[in-house]
Each structure stands twice: as structure tokens, then as C-alpha cells.
Image 1 (tube, rainbow, N blue to C red):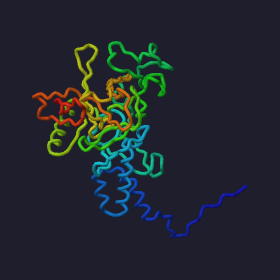
Image 2: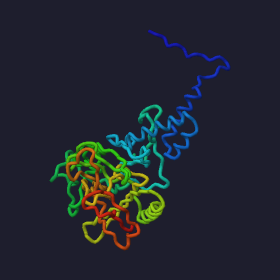
Image 3: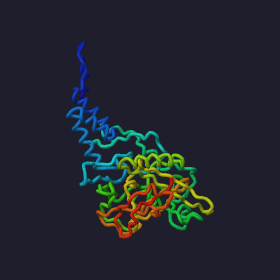
Image 4: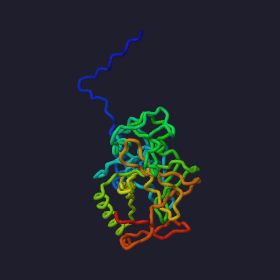
Length: 349
């Protein structure tokens, strides 16, 4: 039987093991710099050669995955137009409550979550898909959900809206009626266009009917949506600025009321913020999906037809007619379709 060696005794006055200052500096920089936004990162990069190299590494790794490993697949940026390597925003795969000021998010380190040098803090997107909209725990008790048997698949009077099982259901995450809750499962990429800016493209063949993503972002009250839209309009009048505030109206079964949902993906959102408008309707269809037990539906995108690799993903933002109320806020449309009306849809928020 081997005996363990006794711990080494230190002599009186002997210093403990000390991490070299250079290594300690490098470790701290790798922990702190991924939390910085591009402007802050650029300032830090000018202070010394070491921080400049770390900043360049962070910029490179950010361009490799817009989703920060929060989706099933990496979503890279591609830019052959200018020097902008990526678009900066906080990523969330789900709808979340409005946040002011927006939180910071770890992004761009070479290490993955689980590594000793990677702090695994909960991100803004890890609060849970149903944390915002859960109103009760009622749902199906199916072990295997099938049409005609599962009460979540069809709601009386709600046929115009898709329905999925929710967190209150007895079925598991592998349920076939939870297609949109499993994250992005098709390869897409974010490509820089000279006229449109950043656009979302297919990076593989996507078959008709396949789920692409949901429109994720901050859920706003009507007053907050109007306040932000006024700010965005002012920013757009003085600089190149693109907002991603989407207003959804769901007509309730009674026909006498309309539920309005304001989702702002300008500061916090997912890849849906890069899907552009097309006057011909685009190649994506939108479906309002309601999960069992949830108060608010989610706007989800599906392939309206087969989409080939390297084809831009687009949908119709709505009516593009310019009226007296929105004439001052009109934006030029660059969709390039044969039926382009020249103006993006716009309405008073």
C-alpha cells in the first residue's frame, strides 16, 4: 500500500506560489473583454499590443457565431462590402421583458461555456421560454400527441393560429407538437449587402414548411413602443440607423377585440431581426403560434417554398402604401423584386 506524500512545508517567510503577472493580466483580459461592446473594445485595443491582439481575436470569434452558442447551429457573419465584421446586439432566442438599460452579454471569447476560463453566467436569453407569458399550467396529458386526440393541437375558434404544447403539458421536449421550441435547426448566415445592410440568407437547402426561427426580442407596452419609435425615427433622420420594432395584431375570436404585441429586436433579439421585406411576399410565411398555457402568441417563420442555399430570406412587412399619416417616415425599399413599390411598409406606432 502506497503512502501519500505529506504536503510540502513552507519555510518561514517563504512566499506562496504566485501566478506570473503577465499570465494573470492575460487571464483577466480574457474574462473582461468579451463583455465589452465594439466601441469599448476599440478603445481598449489601443492601450497595448496584448489587448489589441485579444480584441482582434474577440472580433474574429464574434463574426463566427451571432447566436453565442445559444442556438443548435452557429450563425456566421459574411461581409465583403466593408470592414464591419459583425452587427452588435444582445442575443435572445425568446421573447423577454423589456430591459432598461440593456444587459451585457459574454460574446467572442475563444473558449466555450464549461471551460475553466469561461464564466457561465445566465444570459438574457436563459430566463425560460415561458417566463414572460405563462398564465397557468393547464395543458394536455398526452404521452404522445396526435391530431384528433391532443387538445393542444386545435383550439375552438382559434383555427387561424397555430398551436403547440406548452410547459404545462405532460408530453416531453421530444413531442412532435413542439417544433418551434427546439431552436433553429437549419443553417443560415448573416450577409452584408451594400444597399440593405445585414441580411439573413439560407446556408443550405431548406424544404417548404421547415421552421426557420421565431421573432424574438423585448416585449414592450404601447407607450414604451411609441417612445422608442420616436427615438428611432430621430436617429434615422441624422444617421444610418435601422430599427427592428415589430407590431403584431391578433384579432381575437370574438371579432370585437384585437391583441397588440410589440416586439423590439433593435437592442435585444435573434437572427429574425435581419430578415428583410420583399414586396412580392418573400419566401417565408409567418404564423402566430400559441403554446398551451401561454398568454401571448409568438410570430414564427416557415419556408413558404423550397429555398436554395445562398438565397436571401424575406417576407412581407405589410401594406406598402404611403398615406398622409406615414409619408414623412417612409423608407426606400431595396428588395429588388419585379413588383417592388419602392417604399417599405410603415405605420404610426
